[in-house]
Image 1 (cartoon, rainbow, N blue to C red):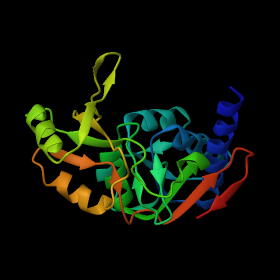
Image 2 (image 1 turned 180 degrees about the horizontal axis):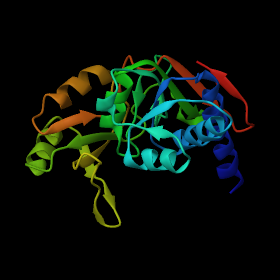
Image 3 (image 1 turned 60 degrees about the vertical axis):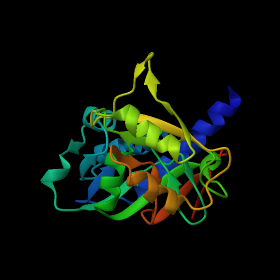
Length: 228
């Protein structure tokens, strides 16, 4: 329980630190996940103190959280750009390569990040890794022909498990399935693997994120933060 509490403090520290980068009249992209939720919490407090922003959410969960806090949230199609997006990561290395999608929102998160002038990634210290691929890699897959798509992925030499929730298939906000891949050892070239997977018909997107993170805020269990 103590470890959980200190890890929670690390997430909160990173989330609250990120708010310092938000300025008046910005269009802000909201990530998804437990650390991103702390950022949204801090953003709500800042808005109640007078900060004026417009938000675009990467998931229905984050949108609901922001709306409940009184933040104006619009659809991505209603804006021409995003000034800054703040999001978490399941794993990130020194090259700022990431694996995301633990919450099943990585397709929307990637669209949001690619539309942003700046992307800030907030993580607790346990998410920083020497190489990505030690955590599961989520792959969003169309329901149509999903078993065939799974077989093609397995033919590449990888084993995956369909994500479930309450013993039912997990369905993304886009209406798709999530196949989680587990690697015995981290892939030597995540970039090449991403391309291989994306070339399979039925694969919507992988949880690999490259060349998108500008700043990384790492929260520590003592409540301190550092910038990467």
